[in-house]
Amino acid sequence: MEICEVKGCNQPGQRHHIVFRSQGGLDFKLNYKYLCPEHHTGNESPHKKKEIDLRYKREMQMELLALFFEDTYTLSQIIDLIGEDKKKLEKKFRKVPNVAGLYKREDIVRALMGDRTY
Image 1: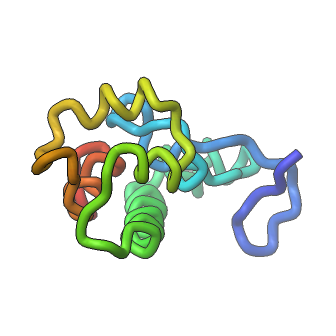
Image 2 (image 1 turned 180 degrees about the horizontal axis):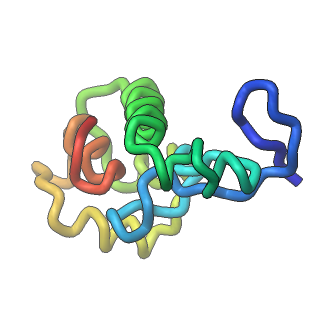
C-alpha cells in the first residue's frame, strides 16, 4: 500500500492521475501521485484547488523534461522510458509530429501532458 505523498501525512494513499484521463493522461508512473482521501478529494486537493492541480502538473512536466533530456526519441525508446502500454502510446502518438520516426523532446512532453504545457 502506498502512503500519501503530501509532506507530513502518513495516511494510506489513493492513486491520483496528475493529468486526468479526461485530459488525455495515460497510466504511467510519473502521472501518478498517491494522496490520502483528504488530500485527494478534500478541500485541499487538486480536484478542488486549481493551484494545487497546476503545481502537480508543473512538477510532472519538470520530471518529464529531466527524463527526456535528448533532442529526439523513437516510440520504442519512449515506451521503455515511461513503461506505458505500447498500443496506448501508439494511439497517443499517432498525431504527434515526427521525422522518420523520431519525436522531439518538447512534442513528447506536450503529448504526455495531455497536449498542453504548464
